[in-house]
Amino acid sequence: MSKTVKLRGARRLQEKQRRPLAERLSRTAPLVLAGVIICFVISGVIYLPRVMDAYPIESVQVEGVKDQRRQQEVRVALAELVSGENFFSVPLRQMYARAAAISWVDDVEIRREWPNRLELRITERVPVAVWNESALVSSSGQPFKGIGKYSVETLPALFGPEDRLAAVMDYYHSMSKLLASSGLVIRRMAVDARLTARLELNDGMRVVVDREQYARKLRRFSRLYETTLSADSRGVASVDLRYSDGVAVAWRDPAASES
Image (cartoon, rainbow, N blue to C red; front, side, top):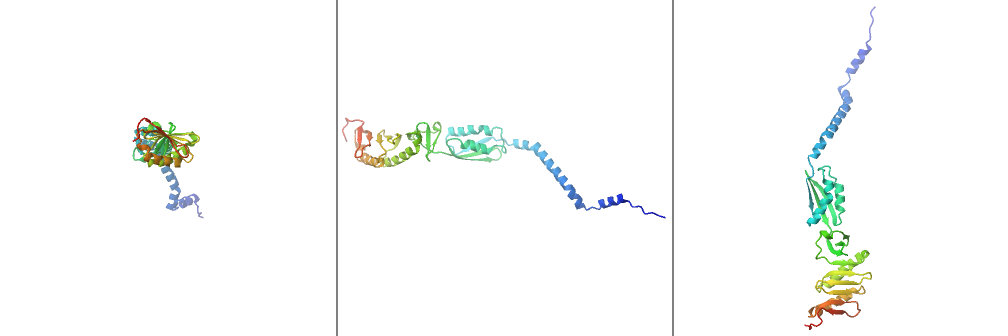
């Protein structure tokens, strides 16, 4: 009597061999992908620093700064942040903060220039006056440091209480307009706590005017200067406008005859 022998192990092997190729690939694909990623990461760790170090920052171009003294201040402020850095690693945000913190800088833009250069575009504050011999005043009325880095010989010198800069600047602009029609320019202006102003003009004349109706008084003085005072051979040394209906004039040479 014959017997049929069932080979269960062989049957399982045949079933395993008959699994579709796509199924087998789908099981091995994640392992292959993980291996590729690991190789990529290892290669990056090994070679990326070498690639980055091949592009060190070699120059920093500063645009918009007109004076060499201020150019140098920017370069010194950023030197520490640029030293040892490359095109990819240079800290642009820190550089921006460092440049923007310079008192005379109004705005700044920084960008990389491939392969080894940085470009800074700086907008400077425009000084219009010297304030209390210790600061400059910008065209927007803001005080800032930097007297030693600007040529200030032609700027008016303004003096007053530290907390009254805005009032002094308003005074200065208003008075300058009132005197401009007579060709007179304010070179020095000192304002006290009561807003009495003492002016020194471009021809050396000194003018004192209080805040009470100062515009009317200066207009009256301008007309008097144009019609009479400018032609007087004695030369006007000073004028006191602190009178409601007149002016007090001091002459440089009282003995000279009127022309």
